[in-house]
Every structure is written in structure tokens, then in C-alpha cells.
Length: 378
Image (cartoon, rainbow, N blue to C red; front, side, top):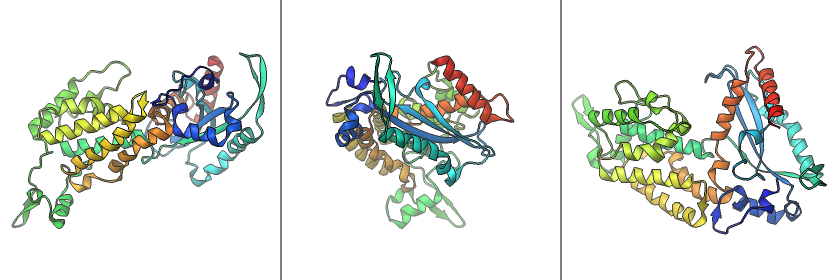
């Protein structure tokens, strides 16, 4: 727990851990009494709802509250053994606004640990000390906050528009009418013919042959175990549609597979813009970041979005696409994204679901399984 003070080598321009973040340093500057004791714990807090029966139905919904210490080194920080489930809010209904009632005991304990502290024994040094804690930030399943959701939504819009997937495509008749109302890009205006109209092909539209080749490429992709799921299962039998992709599948597609899959298809400007977008997220999600690189990414993403605005219709640019502009600055404030995104929390939910042995009492099964696992670990 004293790693960040005792053995960590601080480098001015490098971000490897939340200890390098602006938020951590600003907190130490404002609360010097807290920073002077290396045993004091910086915590992250997250909460999310889930169905314990392994399906996506909302008929039964329970919520967990997890705390995790950031004092640990990168190879231990934000890993399963050190994620503490401090609260499990029972179902079947989501707590809604009443979540404050359930959180009150935890909040009171955290406030007591912040103000009064608790006498603790350090087995490594054989000394007693008064330990305090502080919640640095919370991690939420909000689409506008989390890198995971922003990346997923952007990639989903790109694939929906390229492959013309129903309910995912942004190039609709209304989008073409908007271009006419704004008197721009006349080559994309709807062409009316008596009682019907046609949509002229755009530079980002893929032909049926290109869609099939794209699907065949994804069906042939094989990734190392643990790197990604079997994306080939998400490709339709005709090879022209994608379905049931998870957030991490979009993460792998945008950063690694999409630039290769669309190579040689369509317009060169579309290909280069998507390559640059994938490279932006690839550099942003590195385990080690440099402040100079983040400042450059902050400038690059503006240019990348401008290029995309020259290619895709205006309907493509809803709020989730523009939120990418803020991600490099967010990394400067909070450190590498691996300590703040929801992937680890979602995987932890799968672990909790596996504890359910008695479907009549899912809460009891989860608590019992978690306590047994904790006893075996420690």
C-alpha cells in the first residue's frame, strides 16, 4: 500500500498510474496532511446494475457497489482480488433515487475514515498507524463519461453507415434532406422522380460485393485467447451485417481490424480518416502515456473530426462523436484509461453471476460465493 511513495519512480512527462495524474497531485497539494502518510488509501468507487441470471432482461435488477484502492502497483491495481464489493443492493427492482438510502451506511463509514481514521497495524514494518482514506473519483456506466462507451458508439455508427445496417445507419433520407435545406453537397441530394426518389451513392457507401468481402474477412479473423471474443459469430450468414457485438468487440474492431478490413474499398479519404481515428484511440488506450503525446492527440482529434465531417452526413455527428475531443484532457487529469473504464467492472459482473446457484435467492448466492472466494484468496 506504500508502493506509490516508497518504490515508484516519478517521471514528469510520463503517465503510468493514477499517481501521475493531475487529480492525484492536486489532491496532495490541497490536503498535505493526507499526503504525508503513505499508508493513507486513495479509493475509486463504482456502481452498476445487472441481471443475476445471465440475460439482458430488466425483469430482475440488482446493484453492486465496489471499492478499489489506487495505492497498489499497476500489476495489482484494479484487479479482481483487490476489488472490494462493499454493498449489494437487492432486486428485483432497481433502487432508482432510493440508492442514497442504501449508500448512506457506506458514506458514513467513508466519512469517518476520512476525518477520524482508524488504528491499523502494518505487518511489514511491525508498527501501528492511523489510516485515513479518500475517494478520488467514481466510475459510472454513463455513456458520456466512459471511454468504453464513447469508443463503442463511434464504431457502431461507422459500421452502421458503411454497411447500411438498419437502425444503425446515419445516412438516411432525412439526413439527405438536411443537406438540401443547408444548400451543401448537392451531389448527395435526393433525386425525385414523379412519386419516388433515389439516394445517390456516397463515397462512404460500400457495394454489395465489398460488404461480402468485409464480412468474409471478419469471419476469417482469429485472435489469441483472451484478446477478443469470436467476432466471426457476429457476422450474418450472407456476410453483409453485424449483430450482437459487445463493447470490447467494437474496441478491437476500431483500433485493429477496421483499418485492415476496409483497405482498398471505396474512397481513399474515407480510409485515411478512419485509420487516423483508430490510431487516435489506440494511442489513447496505451498503458503508458506521455503528456506531450496527449497534447498532440488533443490537436489531432479536432482535425480528424473535421475530416469526418467532410465525408459523413451531419446526422453522424451526434454528441458521442464530439465527446472524443475531451478524452486526451481527461487522461491528463485522471491518468491512463485502464484505471477508469468499465471493462474490468463488466468482467467482475460476470464473476458475480457465476456465483448464483440458487435462482430463488440470487443475492444470498452471490454474497456467499463472494465471501468464500475472498477467504480463499486472503
